Image 1 (tube, rainbow, N blue to C red):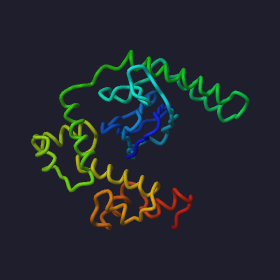
Image 2 (image 1 turned 45 degrees about the horizontal axis):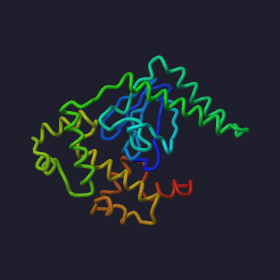
Image 3 (image 1 turned 90 degrees about the horizontal axis):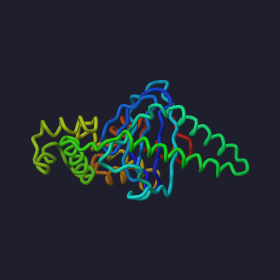
Image 4 (image 1 turned 180 degrees about the horizontal axis):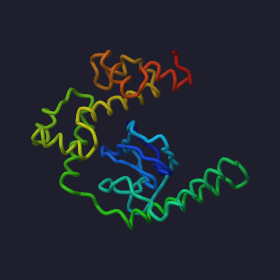
Length: 250
């Protein structure tokens, strides 16, 4: 689970299906869906993608629409996934043309790519205005409230009992609401937040594995190793070595 603090990200599902968590909400995505990752929004790909999943993705810095902060395409209260519908072919063509012009590195290629990107973003904004309504049901707002609490306290020793006490909800109802909202149990979401932050610290700081484990809330380093390996598929030290050097010991 990670976020981008300097850019907006747009992803387009060309083929296949997958499962994503965006800002704490679970989404099942399919061919033609557009995923909108506003700046600073936590997101995570779940390991349930189909074998034929193909995505186009681009990051955008200094995106600005009237009435919205920089690098934000939609308000937080709106869903982050929408279908492209009859615009599927047009959007796919725009992505492919952008890549062709930018990767060719010919005269004015970057300028052409940027102009195509502007067309793509305006098209996405138009689609969103036409097809997306406010999603502010009571359970969605409760789910967001639970998520915000866990985000603020995920490094602490919290559990279902302490969360329900803080939010004044019954444990059963809280677990049900959050599972529907995010696709995770509160404990699993907390673990993914911890491991996502651990991945960031391993790659962006000089902290050792034990220091990283402590920084994200784990007192037991062995427990941190086990959970990290289960979620990421590789031990933390090997993960750091692989991404920083391109090599990992067998």
